[in-house]
Length: 436
Image (cartoon, one colour):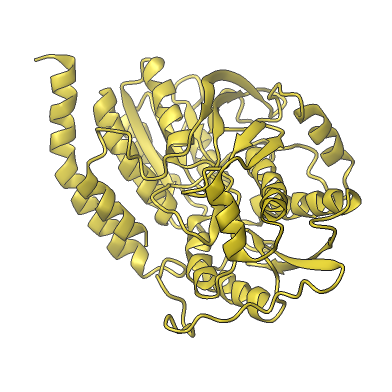
């Protein structure tokens, strides 16, 4: 049997399991806070009229980040860099001649709080747009609220894809810009067995469903799959299963401080980057030294690294390291958050307005770019995602990333993976429904 035919057979065998798995994702995620389609208290038949005031010399924007709880380890820096971007834009004349007045809210790693704070920002504070979030559950909590009130939300973190909204702009990677490059890299390194470890919510479960399909196409065997709730740090039992499975690599979709418990259990079990390396999609320059153990030799898939050699990156790093409250290092999510405010500025100025419908019309016309630290990114006006470079980094002794692989050019966003033959439409539809 040929290699191509073998891979097709594997895909054919795995699709029914994917459909069943999608149903489990739907059952498992549907009851979780933040994964519901409609937050309580909102009437889907009545859209609130915007109260945004553009008559003065300021424009209000909302920043919504988890400053407390398990995700604060990552989201505090996103909040700080949004402040820096706002200060920079104000120093340069603001947006359409108006100074940014930002209102900071704490999502508190609690998805109903994200929904409540979003409604407050839109209906009481009357902000023109909201920036923030990290987990997909936080985004799923925000999404119906901004759609109900025709607000705008700029989301800065890589995610599982399978989503687009006229009220959300995505400046982090979608699946084909991070997950797919990571899998391509593993295949190029001869990886034959893979263990999936993730937090128990929508992003890891959906991402791993996609990973399993692509692994079948690549001839990589998934030898185990384990999840722990986002607010739990004990990975001892799950890591013992990794030891028993003895995979070539671990694909890590864990988020927040739960990574600390995972890394501890990993080393306590005798695993090392030399024997069982990890590739992560949520550990960046800031998280690496916070793991409580040296993680040199493990890998991450991102679009931006501090070590990236681009024209704008050195000045960006210098400005960040001079900014009050900085984390000392730059990272992909904070760079994507930084981009998000400049993207909003470009959109508003292209539209000549802060009106949401006019901003979306300007996006649809095309040609919106941002000269970002990762390079010049281009907005796709149809799906509201941006082009991004793909990069794989290996953690060095300084908790920086040596780039070991890069895409040939910028990767155009394909959030629904429509260009991939191994991703059947029935599985896509089931996963979209499961993700909410």
